[in-house]
View (cartoon, rainbow, N blue to C red):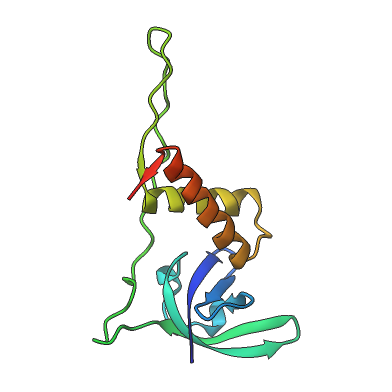
Length: 146
């Protein structure tokens, strides 16, 4: 059994990818190999799974929620909360608009969604690497705190 986190999942297409906690290449995730409801699956969800070396690379089998020492799920089994887009900013009296300061979690969620929209072919490892750098950049500019 391998532990990891869902990097992305496209419910319309029924597949996504998991980044194993031990590192290495992302593992393909198909809806038919999940032992949990599809509605639970979202980026960041902690899962446990078996790995099969398929024709096209690594594939996850028997995917289920990862549990902590007390038997409770490491991440709650619910749909991901919707992250509201930033409100439209208006210039008032010729002054530059203030920017919202986001929590690291909000900033990370926004960056992840942006990367998935802009470059859906990125691997989970690439997304995690870019996201780490962008969070540090956001913190250094005061756009994210926490």
